[in-house]
Amino acid sequence: MTQLPLIDCHCHLERRQLAHGAGALRAMLDRCRQQQVQAMVVSVDCSAGRPEHDIDALGAIFDAHGVQLGVSLGFMPPTRSQDLASAPERQEAAVAVFRSLAGHPRVVGLGEVGLDYYWPVVALVNEGQLQALPSGDPPPPTAAWDLPDFQRYRGLQLRVFRRWIALAHELELPLVIHERLAHADTVELLAEGPLAASRVMFHCFGAGPQEAQAAAARGSIVSIPSSIVVRERYREVAAATPLEAMVIETDSPYHSPIVGLWKRARQAALDQVALQDVPKKRREQAVNQARDLNLNTALELDLPGLVFEGQRDGAPWRLTALEHLRSSKARYLNEPTFVRFAAREIAELQGLDLARVQGSLTRQARAFFGL
Image (cartoon, rainbow, N blue to C red):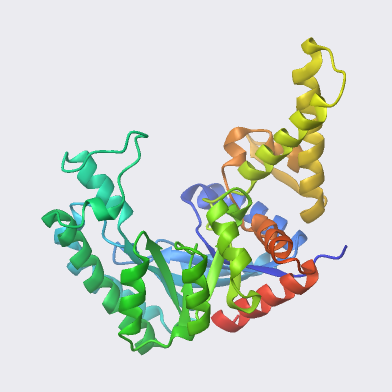
């Protein structure tokens, strides 16, 4: 089946990708071009008062490899104790950067910006103000709601986010929102205006299917990450959200779908071997062989002929996707090429033709970001 073009609507680039002449980035872009991932929107953090990447240098590399680059200018929500004092000054520096870059031809959005109540709760647990759950996880924000320190975090984040909403409207840029355990406050601030709901994209949508439907009804865009393969919450959201209100992303290098595909392949292998009369001493080998076959089938379905290439100790190396992804480290590293798995999951969950889903996702991405 001929692959239709797709767009990764939100990802990050790591320093390691840009080291040694950006060799890792160039190899990744070659994979994107080969697999018809035609464009990506890279979130460039400006929290330090300057862009974390040289946008012009990145653009030249992308152009040389035939992949379109869009940039969204971000500022992560203040979530650490040192942020309480430094955030206002850092925000003003970022505002100046945003204004200076708003007219850059590569800049297509403002974000990710928004609210994050998870990490302030973690900080309060570390400071001994809250108890972790028996599982070791931090408690929900409701457990911290009345604590003065949490309210300081919340108040600061709300003030910062209001400024970004207003600035996106002023600069006429779409807004890419990060909201973790803070959906109600996010919606309330957006309702205050002045930014039109149609100019809002919820990156890695953090709430549930009803909230996603409400966001879509307001005209906003819901972005589904590639980790939909392994995370039930995203599957529920994707099943309930109108197709015309969705785009897809990888949030690379996070949210890898390969972890989920690996688990699926192994479970299917266990089921297959259980139905066979395999001697006990050969079962693990049989499971591993069946797992590799299942995983390779899944990879070839969406990324036919995918290979990974690079340099190691001055010598070139080349591995098939299956060979490369046998490494647990590799399985946890996401990349824009893997956005294809999100499209297939959405098609299967909604019972729609994959080509129709791919076409819709790409049209929505191009329209929202003006790509």
